Length: 73
Image (cartoon, rainbow, N blue to C red):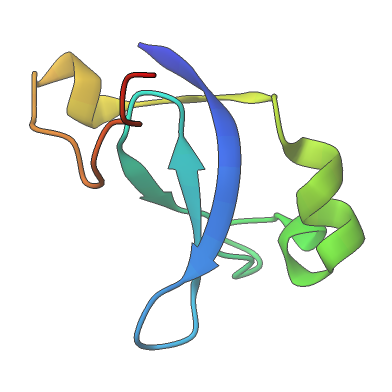
């Protein structure tokens, strides 16, 4: 299921992780020639990709969220 990117953080090894609207995380490494994502290297590139969608395998598997849902107001 495609989910929009809402933010980014780094993991314990310094790899970039996309935070998806569904509450799941997904690594977005730039590791040519296997994964070509030069946009992840810069803050400008990451900001420009917010809102774009990535396929979320965790949603397809009905996995629990990786981070909590926002509190209801």
